Length: 315
Image (tube, rainbow, N blue to C red; front, side, top):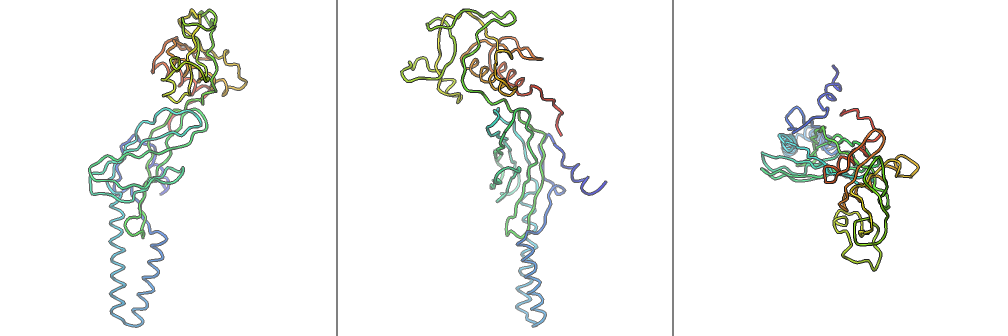
């Protein structure tokens, strides 16, 4: 087995936690360290040429400091333990946040850089005996599973002459839901025997739908829970609907493309849950009986997020 095969095998995704032992921390001189070494060599040649004892002393003093800095750079990462948290839900187009906890049982660590390949690295100091949390944000462009990419942990503390680094690959991924479409009224019709029916009009009997807020609407009808969930300022519209459940079907979304239909169904799931309506989901290959609640909402959104996607598992 070649050297690179051993390295790649060692850094396959792991469940965690991951502790940086001596075999996981690599160390090489930086560009500044190489220049510093060339300067030390020139100073040593000058001391030999002129047989100057003070030049010898200065050269060996600087060389000893650089050697000591190797140990401090290595120890700044050695024995750190990393835990990957569960990412919160996210919709396509928004950033997903992967929480990462760093456990430090030794002395305080300084200027530890954490980079995951997107944006600028996070540079932080880690206090002894505390669990330090760092958020790694990744952009999302499409629905489906988004694995946490390889993380590089590095440091050039204390003198910047050497760089110590290590790789982390966690077996963690986030489920990205479809991007919600703009507000549209919930579909009210009978689908596959669903107990729905009636007309949608203005009244004070039953909830009919959510609609965007217009100036002059009563504040009593504003759906504040939906506003708190950052779904926009919407109001409840009541009418004469004598229904106990609403079916959200593939045929009810009249958009042209598959992604547009999924976005519309995603919007209806969020609106129905925010309004407290009992709803079911009916689409090719899946049927979710009418219900409501956080677990039901997540089940529907997961079906929409994974529609037509074959889960090949983790790398």
